Image (cartoon, rainbow, N blue to C red; front, side, top):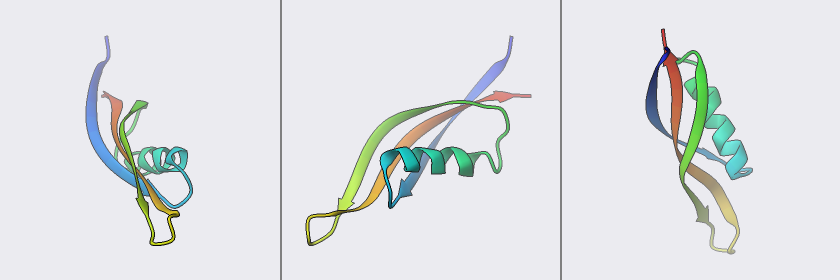
Length: 67
């Protein structure tokens, strides 16, 4: 039976929440191996003075297998 660990991460993107999730996984993969899943806990966006979204932000939990 595999042992799993969960870390909480924050990530952002100028494109979309989907891209922010990919940024989170890509950055976590630089120091963590065997990533199994990502659970998006919260989504936010910043809005500029013209009423347009500037940044998409996520708070996520990434699960990975411990070796």
